[in-house]
Image 1 (cartoon, rainbow, N blue to C red):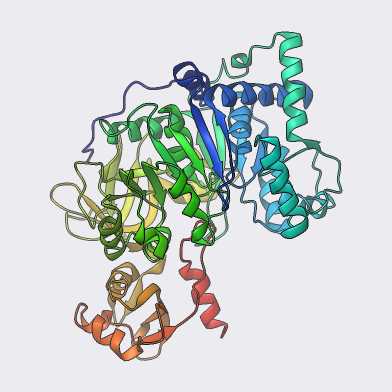
Image 2 (cartoon, rainbow, N blue to C red):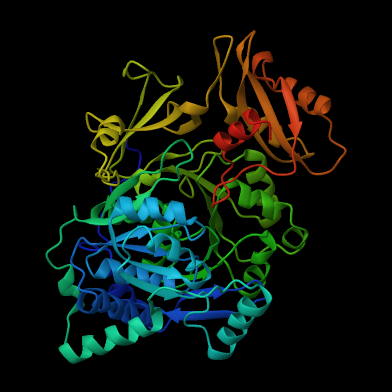
Length: 558
């Protein structure tokens, strides 16, 4: 059922066209501002980003000799180099391979080998790992950027001094490489000397042309490269614009981007959609500790932000945030993991701004459903995006009635072509045109959907299904709980037992008190059999709590 109007209008053709159109509309307005924990910052205008990304596209095609469809890895945190490099790669007609800069050399090698990359743009802080990778696989074109790229000379100099002598976070790069600034200069010189028209690189590309290899988080198995086309991502941007109709002020919004831009939500929504809308994107290179966001909130009039549940929860528990909340915040968007209602309610009580929950996956560019402003229903993941069909299937592939849980399946223009070089995995995930998400959901009579849980995370207690999200939501409402995760553990009597792992606010919370709290809100078989207090819970790079890793730690006796 499609409850939103189908997307219409917007940019057609290639994703890189967004940059040139935004430069025409917004010109010298600030497009990106990178804010360091101490408040130092640098910025680029829309004209800057368009010109510099043109230069990088020319460098890749004319200097490096890359061709349309060649894969280029981009491995940087949130910084001014990211939008320039990403848009340059896409303008060149190459395929962007977003890569987590915190990856180990082994993880880098696996992803680079799988993607078959022809070039890489990597931040200098982690470029030392390339020597190990290069000893085992060819790396022909290496371009090294920095967090201080494009910052004023004095500011950038201070940052580099701190990195080199205080943090000691600038290791030497021992393999042949080109500096990003030098690559841009060379590309610009070639473009002017030869009169290169950058738009020609993508002129013959259709919407089915591959734009990104976006690797899945690997939280439930081996990471796979989702093949996202220019049409997939542009369609999702248009769908998002429809949801925000009347709430997006062109050229006026200020978007806080604490989620990493290499993550698909930040990539499509924060980066591309808000770039197209002329927003000033406030980039946070590292949101940990959460106090790294303090100066961004203090010095910039943030109007929108995205985050995962753990980010909003962390802000709720920061004294500086609660005592002096942002006065210009118009709303926040939650994705990546289930939004706990206790967290959303407290965030609104502090800021006065709603948290609009959506649902998506790497394979769907990413947004499938959303609680659009004015149509939001708390506790749900909203309605399907425009031109999107959803269905709920049981284990035999039959549709389930409204109110009954079933596996959520999706059809729509934002659904990937498949997994890179993995036809068998593609065949498992896409059946009869439906992409099977692996998530269990219910739908009410009005079409609003609610995620019950991951299919693989469901706990079977004496034949009864227990969904960790439901139990976690109840536990999170206890005032003594900071964070929590629920998993199933082997049990001789019931098959599995519900086990809760909790990070308490202080030492006053007891396991008995928490179990009594759960008994008041949950039926007996859903109540945790055990409650274990921990100082931390395992999380992904975007702050998503990893139940798989927690289960492995517990079973290993850690």
